[in-house]
Amino acid sequence: MTACPFGTRRTRRWIPWLSISVPTLGWLVFVLYPSAATIYYSLTQYSGVPGAPVNYCGLCNYQQAFTSLSSQTWAALKVTLVYAAGVTVLQIVIGLGLALLLNRRGRLFSLYRALVFMPQIFSVTIVAALFSLILDPVSGPAEKILHGLFGASSAFLGDSSISLPLIILINVWMFSGYTMLIYVAGLRRIPPELYEAASLDGCGWWSRFRRITWPMLAASTTVNVFLTAMGCLGEYALILLLTDGQFGTQTIGMYMFQQAFGQQSQLGYGSMLAMLQFAMTLVIGGVLLFTLRRREVQL
Amino acid sequence: MRRNARDRLLRALGVHSVSFVISAGLFALPIVYLTLQSFKSYTGFLEDPTGLPTSWTFSNFTSAWTEGNFGTELVNSLIYATIPDAVTLLLGVFLAFPISRGYFKFSNALYAFFVFSGFLPAGLIPLFVEARALHLYNSQLGYLVLTSFAGAGFFFFVGYIKSIPRELDEAAALEGCGYFRFITRIIIPQMRPALAAFAVFGFIASWNNLILPLVMLSSQSLWPVTRGLYGFMSQYSTQWPLIAAGTIIVAIPVLILFVLLQRHLVEGVAGGAVAGTQPVTQTGPSTATYTETPAAGPRVPRRAKEERSHERGQATPDYRNVHQESGAI
Image (cartoon, rainbow over all chains, first blue to last red; front, side, top):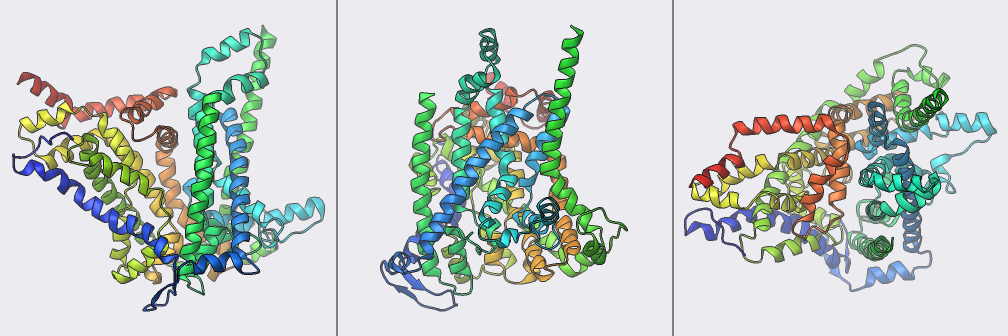
């Protein structure tokens, strides 16, 4: 601790405390308390009807979630994993491809990069409206293309077999610009001498990528994988708008939202689901960070 | 030699056309398509739902505007995006400054606690219960209170403030400058680039937030545009030209912001996120990466802009002046 130099001898003791008091208090009340209270609420039966009592019931919600015959919870955990893994892998591949293609000098290329980045400044509502129209089973252009080329038709987002992959693709469409930019920043830090030396040694495009670009981008890959995976594990706004969790797209976050703020209004059960999502994020985040960091060192 | 030049030209053309097709065709075309549909009449859309409009009409925009209540909702969105953004930044600086300087006991512990709290479960459900108990539910003021204490950017500020020399504090204090005056007149101007970046990202994040308005605001008159568009979509479910027009109305403000700040945003993402890879608890690195990243790209115009703002900065109290004065003492 260093003494604060500001104020008189009397005031300088409490000036820093005054400075942090308002933000800390606000954070305690509106950030820390709700987070911590989720743990308690997950141990209760609590209906969202105003005035309803909070009944402590131990692990009843957890028991119910994992013992009931048609366990929606297991299904939701599985969907969440598929969703997060699908988005992460696709977004890394596409983001890296875009970065390699568009990381060039010139006004036009900065325009291309801006266009790729653009979708994510839009609210999920805008993106959902856009793709609900494009994928509309009656009059959307996707239907026209599918019908014109293959004579087939599809319910798209209303079809359980492709609904989740479509939402994965929409998510990738929205956010691959971000992944691309992190890779662009990574590419610009690679010393050009490395490439010069490699081309003197007669290395081709692929071996330059494998031996120089990919290992030198290890830190960017860590950031991208971690951010994307963590984001997807908690994401449900897009799903809520596009399918409302139907047709095999109910992630754990979506299930939580539906339980807590849908018809049933089960705040206790919803909190338990929030805890499951939290546990999942913690475990996967920890494993990812550990393996990615170790990989960085090895590369 | 000439053949070599021709090959290079062809190659450049190829790269350009591939880049154009991907960025415009995959990422911009859907928006263009949506815009085209908004100019069709409903019957025109039913006859040809994919092509260009045969007769262009503005009626979708006027009826979307009147029926969707977008005017009020845009004002609401503006309120919900600007006020919490400004409060969060200001509180963030007042929180980050004494922590980064270590001006109070347990400042490191408090910082670690803040970092740790980021790993706790999402508190949406208890926040809803709390908002109802504190009468912050379904109220404009309540929503502002709920969103003003998120503390975004605070971690980054701690690192950033460390790059402002500590001697400056002592010099200013010797001159008789008070704590709050020092923060508002010296620290905040110094932090302008960081504050600007976080202000823009905070604004966009609040503007785009859907879940919190969905949970906290039940009266339609209090809705922001994101929530409003969601309601509008379910109300006019198959009237696509109308929905397209509503979507364009909602998208335009963000689109304008994007066009104006495009370079800033795009660079901010790269710089900010890369800085985030460094552990924030360490003393130096986050500031080191911050200064490193802009220089890494060939961004001449931006550097010129920085110099200009630097010149402007000389007119206001600048730490260099204070520095010289302290030297004189």
